[in-house]
Length: 161
Image (cartoon, rainbow, N blue to C red; front, side):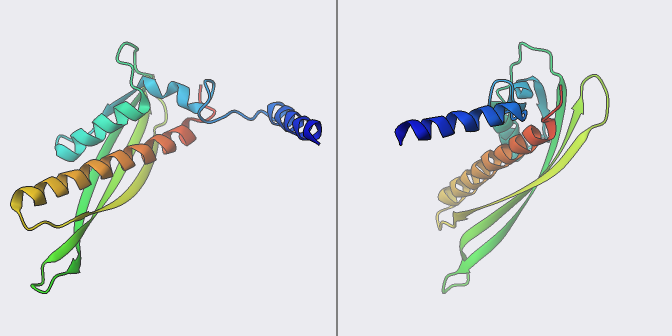
């Protein structure tokens, strides 16, 4: 029984190798060229956080000449959720819409996309705590948006040289 399972697993591996299957996260997969993407974002706090997160998640290697240029814009909106007895919000929902354009450095047709992420954070009564909570929500939204953009780029670059 044990040898039978091992044989089935080996057979499945050979079938996948024969059909041209390439793992998305493997060395030869689409993720290998992401380190050669130069990132630019808008000049504000959310843009800075998004650029920081994107460069980290893409593994940006500044020593190599970029093959692609990624331009992003992020729009955020905040909506109060829940109400206290004094009609103030107990939580806020932060929605960030990120649009991106990936252009080959050598010229060519750009790839575009739009990603949307939503996060929530608690509303605090103290001013410093309220600012800290809002900034934490922005940081989490930027990290999630960077992950979504990275996945979209991997799918878009699959099959690209």
